[in-house]
Figure 1: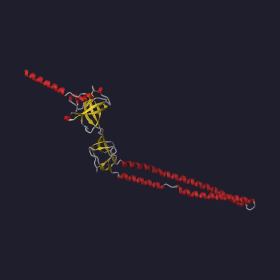
Figure 2: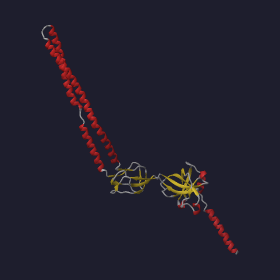
Figure 3: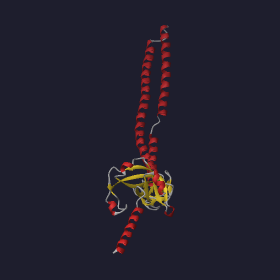
Length: 321
């Protein structure tokens, strides 16, 4: 009996020591995430070239490939040809008006000559060297010439007005065609596969030779320069944390201990949730916790999905390192 009591006592001591040893020396834990983007096709057609590979680090604005846009280019050229044909239909008012103006100059010269002839005839009548009928004939010619001048001036105004109206009608059609050209130009540009943001290719969904449709995913990438550690804190820890608060994040380096990173709390959930199944024991999963996001600058060692721990107290982090 005494031997049994001794064995039970020793087992209890080891159990207590084991519990003290397993006491957590960090405040929260979770996994690293990244802001992922799925880049999709903006044009329909066969993928002629597509160069990215999984793991490639891509800069924003880099041309990664080309989708066949031959049909769109032909449609654009057809509209441009229609615009050129319309421009040729526009009338140049210059030559026609110039001809009428020359006619007006001749008529004005004739008018001046008739005025001089009338003055001369009036003087001859005073000297009894001409008849009144000659003067009446000249006045009739002057009246007729005045009317001809009015008609010619009116013709010039009508020619300019009619040509302007005709040209406006043609040019209005050209305006709508110009918009169509802009549309096709944008569609041709969308045939180029341009990387929108800087990041690392995580998954490639399409390859050269396949058909692309608008909205079809081509590849998935994430900016891994800065990762987000999604960690969970308890209700008792909630008063100790706030947005923009600096914290220490550590990851396991195996036999070398821990690798420490400075982090900043960027988000705290406004409502509680049950602890995820990946955290701790079944009893602890029944507790309510608050999700947080901690931004950590990546030195190239951190990977998406990697496990990390959070230490709110900087002095505690030095002791555990």
